[in-house]
Length: 386
Image (cartoon, rainbow, N blue to C red; front, side, top):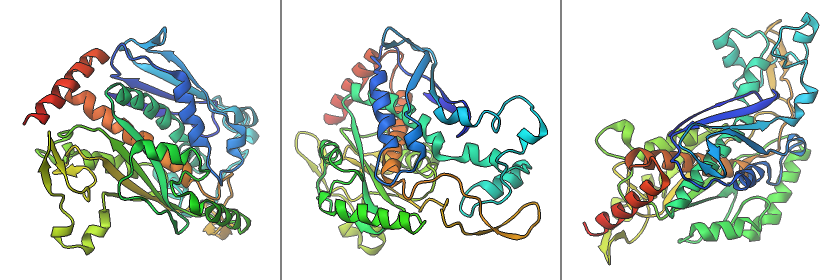
């Protein structure tokens, strides 16, 4: 399976093309739209989410509710486009229109300045429009299809927020995907620890009043993944490496860990490794390594976390330099959120689902969903009897 996304934040629409989805998969557009709505939710989101009500339109690859094995094209309209038609026009218009909403003051922490230097843009809007987290809309749409593939082979995935602005949720030692889904439905900040909900929301409100932003840590867990996905034979075939890369590709993510992650540096090996036991199949007595050994899944729950820095667009902007005059100046202000960590957890969930679906479709026969289901069932029996 492979895919591409396209589109600018204030352009007419966002597009994704996915190739390699098995034929015969019953595809629910409603489920895709529900996942898109989850991405737009979360306490602390800004005004853009009140404008955009993302709904996907599929224009190829699906017929009568089932995939046909051909490339799938998905489109999400940008409703705010009507206010940006002159600014973001594809056609060459009058010079005055080309100067509308021009950006010459790069924002610290964004792609603005380096992107302008790389592609020789004197209007940094050419950078920020594509580097915007609006692009994650299509990655959630792609991940929503990936989740439907995973569901067809009994793999379940969910996400939640572990830390928001320094406030940390208390998480039980054993936390199932279903438990996460049940808890976060009751939380406006996607946390399983509902006891700190009010404190987190109060912190978000205070941050917004101060014109500042806050970051956090999100966690994705996946249940019922068979052992042996990925490989140790080449560095680029290690599945945890692929997941780490796609997590780091999410806007504003600055770190990734699996299982106990960086805590392993402070513990002796005897408290880090997961002992192996046999009881109607192999399992581990703990899951400190987050479901991975040697770059491969080991059959335990996959646990991956990512840290998101505070959003760099501040309503009390930091100092920067005007690229025209080279004079110090307060950076440009684009519409922003005080925090997007709850939404980022949803994005993380979907990009991890996409990598897992890609790996499975590469490893097993998957021209049709029935082929994949048979192959996975046989594989599960084989590894159980190893």
